[in-house]
Image: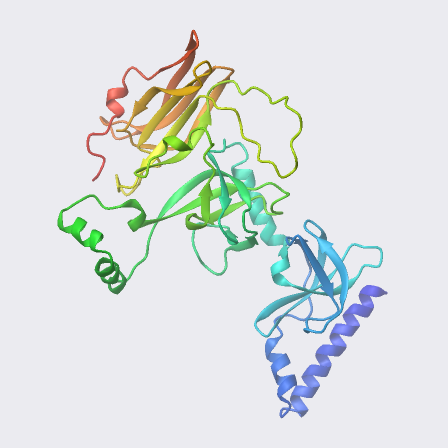
Length: 383
């Protein structure tokens, strides 16, 4: 009966609008309402609440009454949709005992078909090892693909949202000739670098996009793409000191045994800092090194061991002349781990998997690099 009443009510209201439009064209308010309606009947979709909290309201008017408070993750049935004063609204039915019906602003929910696209992306990367952790600097759109278009937005994430970074992509910046000339004129360093024939800077040529995996407590959509300018990489506190301006860390993996923390519980607002340890770190310099139209994800390798007695790091392995692609894979357990990197072979131009074997000699970490490593050291990666 309720469903029949809702349908009849919608048809009555739609008929009323059409009738009024035909016979009262002078009425500006009704004319505006007709123009604003996007869809009034026939929707059959589900939606998930993405806001921390939101209200189902009696209408989309400013003075509407709040009918029901809903929370992130709640499921709704979508009945109608409309644009009112350039804002999209949905009429929805909640899952409470009264099956409350009302209106909710589109920014507070994600439609079922859109959520499914994020779930499909999450399935594709479910077996991929995270390469880094990140946090948003400001509220930002989570997108289905690494491009800023109006039709690929999944949802808007809250400021300071955290996530795992699975991979990333360098996307060429699109600039008009006028913009290029303006940027050069406004930045004398760019002009002088061009005159001196210095290598082109990576971040001048590309935008970086991150493919991320999100916890359900952060977002109902489990995966998507984020624009790199809004992302801050969460480099562990014990190794951030070793990051240099011209060598930015892109991924890191702990290579030693992580001792569990049996200390008393900390207050909820205390920041948990992991004990210092040994790490495999990949970095990237801000220099274009395109080969066959592809940029390397990293061009440097650093393995740091940690001396627990002297409480200091030491360099186990370092190489600044590689051309590599992600992901890095870590295998093994305890202090005996092998990390595998995808490196370009200088002799044949192929990107190949190369294993580096870690082991302990006394209290010192050792890493055995591939015996043919010389073939993977790039003399001049720019082509």
